[in-house]
Image (tube, rainbow, N blue to C red; front, side):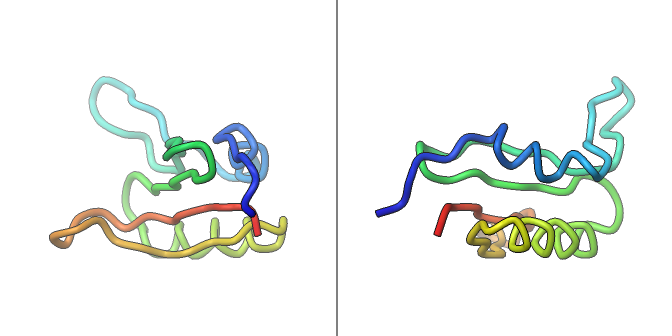
Length: 86
């Protein structure tokens, strides 16, 4: 059965890469996490190079032992990664 997962656990792995940040004029490019229930975290890439960024994050998270499923929001929305524990 999957264990609990917190966004801060994912943040620690992705800390080697620039995180996105709201600057008032828009998003500074980088990663951003969002808690999605008790057992899943979503990872987004803000800014240009969305697919390349997500591929980089996927490899880093898989290397750290997490289960990663690439996805896209319904209706052709944003790409994202669903992260769980194996």
